[in-house]
Length: 185
Image (cartoon, rainbow, N blue to C red; front, side, top):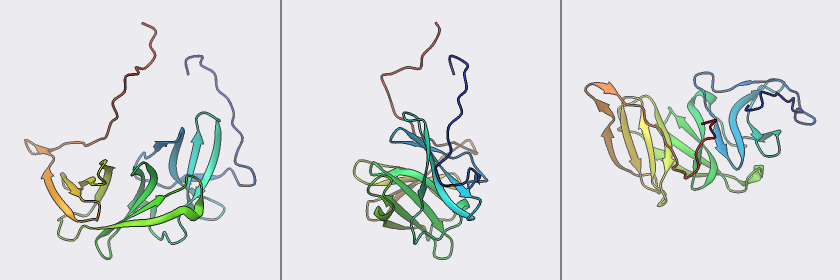
């Protein structure tokens, strides 16, 4: 960007170059393992996949979702759980959130459903995990302005309001760094 130059990258070998955004309702991407990942729909198969662009190799590649993963894309998202790339999916039929983890990066057979969180009893229509702690606890947000915390076995530990003076607060994760963005000053 600093040089104001653009490059064309090659498409994934043997696959079409036609994908559409699977999130449809949000700008969702995840930086993991030197690559930017996002959910996409492979148009030729009408199948959801994870697309990734490796920033170091400058290559685009595709990761298949777990075989038993049967959720609408608007009710799931990517995140990092226990230092591994993961998927979470809200199941409205039984008020649970399934956590899927890819134990070996880019190895399809390593997808494992590791945890099911019960959100029954939380008055909401939408729960979204945002991070996990070193102990394995899961922190998430609830559609009505509440933060929740589950233990590493999926039990609800606590919840608190994210409202201040009647307004909802936006909750995000950040990682501290000693590095700064380059600047001309």
